[in-house]
Image 1 (cartoon, rainbow, N blue to C red):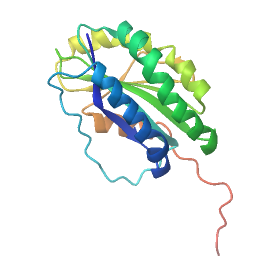
Image 2 (tube, rainbow, N blue to C red; image 1 turned 45 degrees about the vertical axis):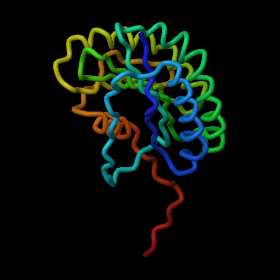
Image 3 (tube, rainbow, N blue to C red; image 1 turned 180 degrees about the vertical axis):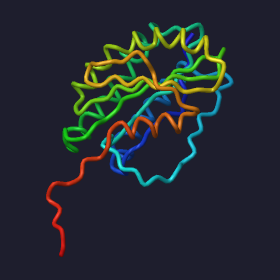
Image 4 (cartoon, rainbow, N blue to C red; image 1 turned 90 degrees about the vertical axis):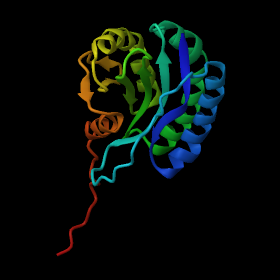
Length: 200
């Protein structure tokens, strides 16, 4: 059984929120009506002011519950057929306009009703094509996720980063979702402008 949350993950500049996160969120909400969450655990992210800059420009992610780990059903019936194409349609235009010198992420936050932990799978790339290369490895990450969460005894969030089609099946563990998102941002340090003039 698969349940899709109406709550979704996103971060980025205001133009990203307007052009991608809001319309993609409406798509996620529509699909969530077909696969509603029962007794949904509230997805809370406490905003934390930070001085760190990141080369990860934007992220949009769907939150799901996999009862009995129906990962294949989620990928085939929901993500590949409905969610992925719609979200990538909005994301493609934004990425093409923003440039390939930044990184972008399409993500899945997978949780199980039987455990309190979660897995954040992030497909990262500088273009939609690179993100799509990464999406091919989602089934492998979901397969490892089942074992990881069934043995997890705490509320850890395990972060898998799949970048440009390359995956490391050793996740990084964080105490909470905020920590995992901050850890993801820190993996991509901001590039400083090359044309800065120094005043004397």
